Amino acid sequence: MENAKAMAEIQTGKITPEKSCKPEAGQTMILLKDVYKSFGRNHVLRGVNLEIKCGESMVVIGGSGTGKSVLIKCVIGLLHHDRGEIYVDGKEVSHLKERGWNELRKKFGMLFQRDALFDSLTVWENVGFALRRHTHFTDDEIKAAAIEKLKLVGLSNVENLMPAELSGGMRKRVSLARAIAMEPAILLYDEPTTGLDPIMANVINELIVTMREKLDVTSIAITHDMNSAYRIADRIAMLYQGEIIEVGTPEEIKSSQNPIVQQFIQGEVEGPITRGADFGHQTLHSIGGNR
Amino acid sequence: MFALFELIGAWVLRFLDESGKVVILFGKTLYLSFQPPFEVRSLFKQMEEFGIRSIPVVLITGAFTGMVLALQSHTGFKRFSAEAYVGTVVALSMTRELGPVLTGLMVSGRVGSAMAAELGTMQVTEQIDALYTLATNPIKYLIVPRFLASLIVLPILTAFADVVGIIGGYVISVNLLGSNSTTYIKRTYDYLGLDDIYIGLFKAAVFGMIIAIIGCYQGFSTQGGAEGVGKSTTRAVVMASLLILIANYFITAAFF
Image (cartoon, rainbow over all chains, first blue to last red; front, side, top):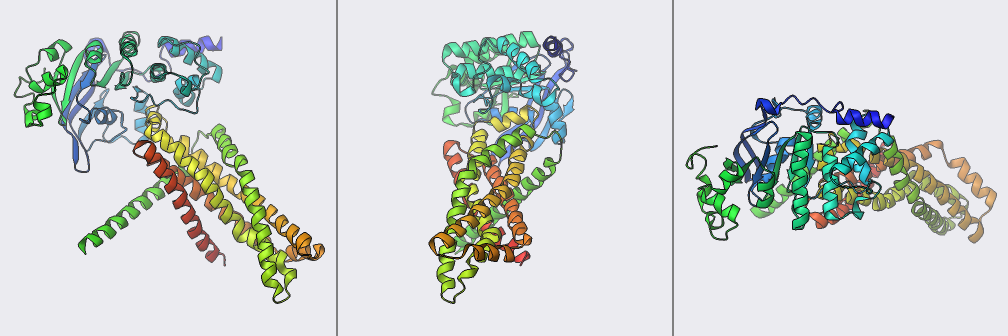
């Protein structure tokens, strides 16, 4: 009975922060305005502008080391940007203190590149971690909720295993189950298919699409896997030399006239990116503006 | 010449930077130790890990230190016929100095390195970032239980080391060196004050804090995969051991 009550509360979202952003209203969930971030002399983000609508699935593409991870880490406050403004659900985050961040982060779920499961906890303890920290549910109730979330990502009878006993794909799915445990409004995916075989990569892609349909979340995924990007994105943004140089639907990106974008999505060896030419500054202005 | 100054300057800046970070971490840990929710489950787990599993090492260290102390002081004291005071010297040395310092150094090697390795691995595998995203303060969740466990456990381990050290000294003096049992116990009892024990236990508590903060700091500041974890582990043991020896002098001087 208690389990049923707990499950009902989780399913109805009573334990999660209220989602103020409504997809049908076309509101903005995340907005980055002229965001800069440097590490010493390494200027990683050099004026990033990006808007993610409520309920939208945005995929940020770009080569290794272009600052994709830095970008989403700035959004969730794992890194703090040097200049510019970042709005999450209408709130500007630059001046948030630790308590403010902790409240805001309850709206987020994040799937890490290396899954980041806690080695010392079982699978269900990992999935139910946030429930244990932020609700008053008993262990039995949390375990029941964790099992439910594991089923959502296609896993059963793994709840008592340790993360070390799982395969790469299973770990990724457990990590996804943990990210959605509190029914977040925003999901961040850091290279969700990296290191997986093609079949498992597609399983994860389908899960990401399913999560969006079932949970009605806004999401940002960063990847350099174009198959994954085309499958999960409503819009794709390309990050190059610290700036967003193009934003568009998958079809628009495929037919982009920007040689940098074309070289990247075609994976060609020869082109402006590998020549190291300064084509990065042939930005939105010179190719027709931000769509 | 300028290169040398540059090198020294860089070293000084790095030292000040790291010292500042350690002090800030210590302050945050101390503050969060009094903030609910209290991680009782984790605290007991760490106390078991650091405390109970360190007992054999500490007992062996304490016993053999007491035994060698009896042998050495007997050799020295015999030269001016003061063998009767071996018990006093063993007891005072163990409680005031060798008990806390050797326990601190042994636990630093065993526990400080484990903390740095565990938290360092968590850092390089993004588990600490994951804690932030789950709206959990890693200092509160990971460092506070380790800090409190170390603070509580080290004086207890030191007390064990003191007791077995004194017993070890007694066994060697009475059974091997032919001292009189009653005299040995009386001399120990007469000259050993409660203050001597308190100072030793206070030192141990400070060493416990040093081991936990340095181990956790090194773990949290790990960069660069498995190699980084290895370096952090080594640095944790070296830094904690040096700080224990330095702090030992200042505490001793303060209570001299």
